Image: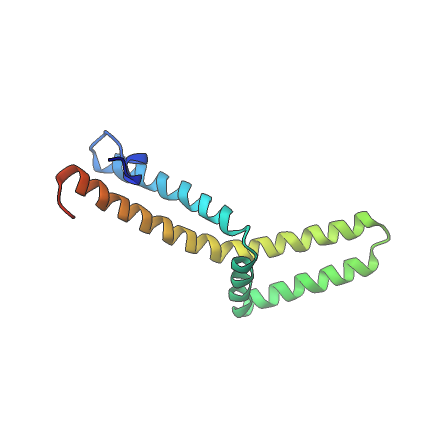
Length: 128
């Protein structure tokens, strides 16, 4: 029976090759999970709340909001308002992506560990 382990195991039995294949799996899975989670408004709100909880993070977002407010009031055109909104969105994305990517990486590592265990059970018939 195929397992998630089969997606990233290597026929090269050297430890460095297995570690590289595992690292590539974790990086790819982390990117997938991060992308999925950045589409969830509740997870983004939680991540921003966490970011705001840090003194530097909260100050940085407050400054971003103040810059947006100033730019919005100074803008003479829709393009100016759109540019102010774009810059704020970039700051918000950066603030949200950190905690979400960290959690996604942890979950991907856990998936890799469970896949290794399932692969070893399939290969040797016993739990690792």
